[in-house]
View 1 (cartoon, one colour):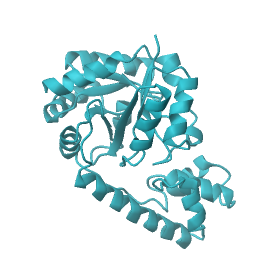
View 2: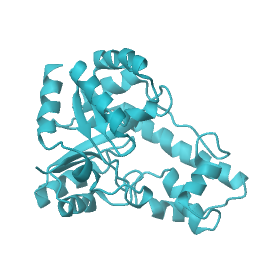
View 3: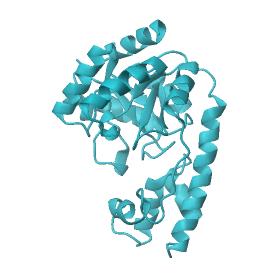
View 4: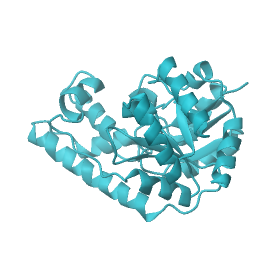
Length: 279
């Protein structure tokens, strides 16, 4: 059975493949289907869905929202039904992201790291500018030797050039996704670093707010944790999903990850759609 990848990124945010080329790569990797979930934007979805139609590959339009919660919390919205107009909340997030980039640029300059703004925009390939693009520009200009060093020294949380995002609260984000036809799935739950007792409180609350699925299969999650998340999904009647979190050259994980590590295929789309209809 061919595998389904419900978590990838393109040049519309911080990936290195344009949406159309992601579809081509997915075909070469023999995937059953692909979801594009760029950070806080739906700008790449029209090109992505059109390419899926042209190449005969199921293409699911999505988004990944950053939440105001504990630690790094991301929520996937998967367009398993017709996606409506993007809500004003998302446009507001995109505006704050632009302001964040301006502040980041200024902070780096204050640290003696003066980058060429036009060159930065070239790294983003017309999509949203993000920290990986700053890191690549810093590496090219000789300020760091690799992308990870840029994050470790300057761009990571708590480092001198870090600028925090503006984020939605979980209940706001879940409501926003449901209103716009997206099925909400908690991305890479390992990043919350909760113990098992805490999960028993968090998951029912989020389900009450509108959560539909949990991303159990993800490169950052070892087998023990994955199995725990699957058990939680069964207990609370949530859909299990799989995603490579593919970013192209900006992360090491290949687009073949779900093919080699997940048992899930296109049936997951049906499960998500049915869960969205029921709730």
